[in-house]
Image 1 (cartoon, one colour):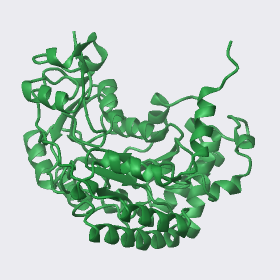
Image 2 (image 1 turned 30 degrees about the horizontal axis):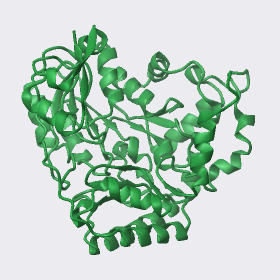
Image 3 (image 1 turned 180 degrees about the vertical axis):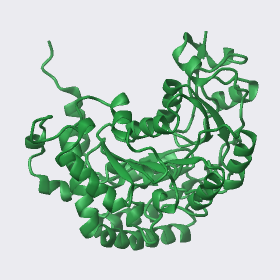
Length: 446
């Protein structure tokens, strides 16, 4: 037996580096409302007569969720300690409990792909338009969604991701208008926009007309990792919401995580709008300064408190830029070949943001050039995702995958548009994209 604790040691070693967190979770390990909860171990309780039970909530958990619904002006708000993944699964179940067709934006989290397989949902894909800048997926447009609805009038819902990982936002109001005219539900993966109700103007999807959205509170707000809200609007069936969560979720939800969601709601009511108003101005100044140095942000509507910086514009691969930031005490959220993403927080001190700006301004220009892009296409769908994901499969070398049916989503850059989805036939173009992205093996249907 070993007396070592490798994960504990890795976490302590990382903290000893002294880098400032510009990644999730939103509390950044800095003073926040979580401190008011005291020793969180003391709150790590279970379902007791006076502590309520999440999936049968009729006591303090029910009251906490009702207060959250009041803040968000939702028909119902449900807590999740299983992250936004659980909210996405439940949201799709409520809209399509027996499967069927759903219109999906092609930019989506793998939890939605897995939910398709579990619920036997057949996706109808809508590609984003590349309108946000080089190397970015872009936005889902209402006209394209309406075209898909006209071709598939039997679809049960429309599902999009907004904002995406880079902070680019689709026009939720326009999408909601299309969905209402067609009598169909609009579901939004709002994982990266749980703070949107605190911005000026308020751009939370529920307030722009979405029927349901999944908010990953821990990403940008003072909530423990795994804390999320499922927000349901007037047209959603809300009576089965807790049953839908229980279908996928653990029977042992974390009380500290749920308590952090409750504390966060109180902070949002009292201080959130002022805190995020200040943060908006601070991030705007950093973004403008970066642009003056030749480092642009995404074009069009974006999350105003997220920093996505195109370092390739000054000849620096985003992965190299991220390493430069780390060497100077800044830990970013994500990087790819062209971009670096950072998540400023109201809990950062002014000196943290000043240091970040100084480091960005000091990035040496380089001579790197963008890699050849592979514009997204829609491969032929041969099987439903359920059959491809849950049926027999095997791993093959990418060189041998042409003509095979994918059993997984292959997305070379996690925030990007998947080259192939489960149930789709791999053609030479997909193969070239996989090889170009460094993917060497792929799971395919036997």
